Image 1: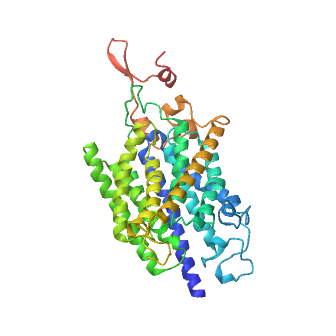
Image 2 (image 1 turned 180 degrees about the vertical axis):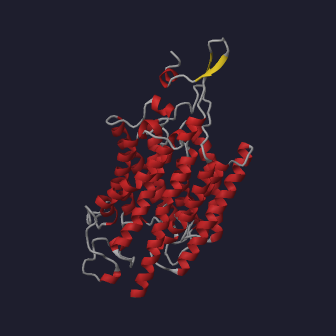
Image 3 (image 1 turned 90 degrees about the vertical axis):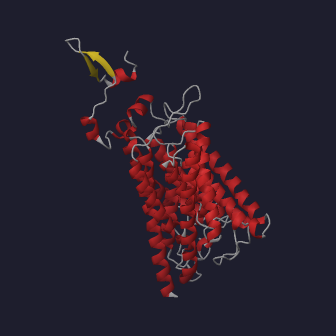
Length: 459
């Protein structure tokens, strides 16, 4: 028994480290998809969000999510991670503090850290959708509320023994619990913030705003792909060779299918195989397979990934037409495919494929029972997270403010919010000239107007 605990703990901690490393991938993808003048701001948000999320989850979030309570919230283990280690190895003396996770044999601190890195992932999803115009302080405050209250309550419903788990909803690694929660919060933020300056013309024209570095975005996508091999298989929270092997295969299959289908669909719709769409297609396939990675076959994972990759292309285009500005496609990747991935469990699940009794999905003779529970979970999560997130964003809007000034947005948040730039040498080597004037000899020369004159239209 002790050997099993050691092996389980090593596996869970290693997987948690891989999930933590996903913060690197998110920072790289989001900064690459943003403009150079906002790069420091994107990196800083991705850096600080994990610290803020960690503090909120430590203080209150863990207890609300995993503590014993009622069907809606945990009521034990609140305030700075208290309560005895309830793993089976420690006996039953203090059983009842965190019953919903007592099945995992690893020590309490390992359980906490693994769940903590998931909480941080939900928070960082929001960053990309509100990029290039959100106030740094407003984002920090929202991230703290997200990690302390919003994410843990939904997590309790689904993973912490709450009412959705009792209803029969299954979400193995978090298509809804992590990705849709982050996606709903991101959608609320993007809608309340409004689009970036110049993104949409009065006549309805959509003006593309390209990211500044697709090299770093592509490398970030590879980092996220790697991190997902901890995200999904690590959710076994045990060194189960069969389950881990199966989940590795379904996870990778979803990723490759999403990559290929997004490239093909973007090629057909846009005339070229768009790299940004392909990157998001890979991530969409990963998000879509996350809920069912332990419940579906490899061939089903291929279909799920193919649909997810196609969905993200149509979704990005659709949100643009609705004038919901999402600079990195986070809503399309995490919300839309989080919803689809959760539905896919109700369609493609095969009972006990890795030893979990889910019942069969609709396509395998299980009827609508599992699918109904999945849809109920999607609706409940959407209503709760979107409502609470919207209220939070609105309170912040009318108190500390959530959007930077137009001057700061045009100049770049790096200077306005942080006082430095990611690429300062570019400015000194290549000044931007935006007007023509004349020298003393009547010859035309390029003139760089002062920032004040530039933002006042030269008046």
